[in-house]
Image 1 (cartoon, one colour):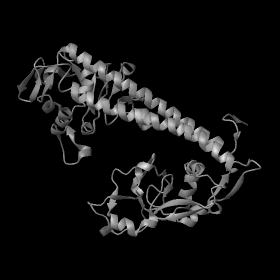
Image 2: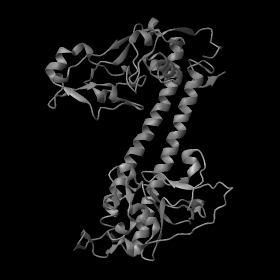
Image 3: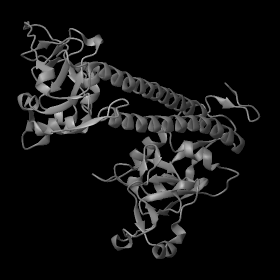
Length: 418
């Protein structure tokens, strides 16, 4: 903790301001597929709050018998055991009705004139608070922390009017974050829908034909992958006394990046090859995880190991289009069918088998239009994701100075002063 404490702030155990109430020990037979009332378990507390997508449910009768464990809107909850120990969330109206399970706690404030619930929400999000939770948590593989331990944690508490002002400032940032997250999620849905539409039905086609791989636009052509791609190798001479910065392909179509950026170090390997902008790299052992990408202009002339296949396109294929086409479920399925091995992490990709697979390819002009459309929405997504990172960074910075009193807030004004 910073040695500086504003004179009107207190540094006291949380237990002076609140009680931490634990949840009910529901039995396995209490849960039912026909249940209608969700139960908040540890797994439902995520980094960004509460997520009930995989919640367990109990019947109305069980809910009535355990009504004293019903949560209310704005209740703050905390995971008290397991890998998520210390993670917190706040109940919103969309979560209700909601029951509290064992090993999840909720904060019951004793006097709202001394501690604001909205201020508490941000107080328990602080890294320093989480660190104290982790220090106090006991146990081997499954850390646990008790209500008394959490209540004994000391925290800086400003006067209630300053609490409300601090909470208002941080809430405004939270609102901006939530709006940006909503925009990103909606854009992702649009992107997914566009990919499905454009990569299977193309742009404004009205006539379709039946082929051996299904119904496709009349102007599209069925080809083998080997008809539109070819293997290339550009071997380089190695020097024994040099380390070379190799590139690697991140899984899940994460792009081509310098190996040192991903693993934090350089390596020396045999059988290295030059790559060029526009090449298509396929990992021989990670392709089932989506480790394939187009080399960007910034990595033209970089080096790749023999763990990758390097492919060139022929005149009938636009690589920007193919970069999107590899995300099509049919191509992903082809990657799996063309790999051999018992363990998924060690499966070996057979490019010669993959080359025999058939795909539907639009005319080159339409490929370019499809790639332009999808790339445009991808850029929009990236802009919003970068904006989200900036907002999250702003929130962290504000929490650091506002919750420690390093920067004081005026109660009657929104600006802050030192």
